[in-house]
Length: 118
Image (cartoon, rainbow, N blue to C red; front, side):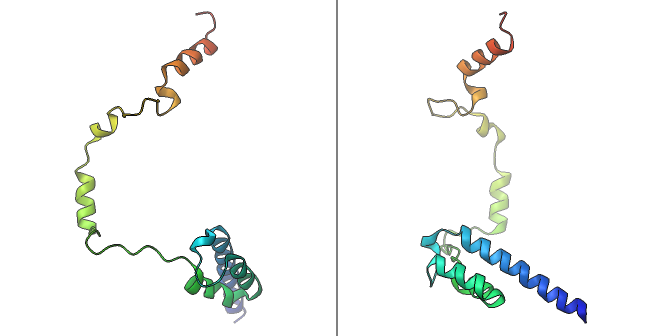
């Protein structure tokens, strides 16, 4: 029976840590029902109850998808299968290189630093 008490304690601590860090990292404008600081105090002071309240009443809701725009898993898999790898190799319209390995000036300078005799 002692192991049950230990298990409940462990689950309570894990839930408390998760809820506290979730509340801490959630942007203040997305928190529901109470200000963010007050949620942190509630979670910290009322260990198991505050964590459960945060999960049900304080966490931001996930944005509801519009009924017409929601793609079914079968449609999502079909669209992934239709991708063409050559589309990713096309140059971008940006005048700046995407990374240092695309920048000819950077590569020239790198070659000079590696082999200064050239």
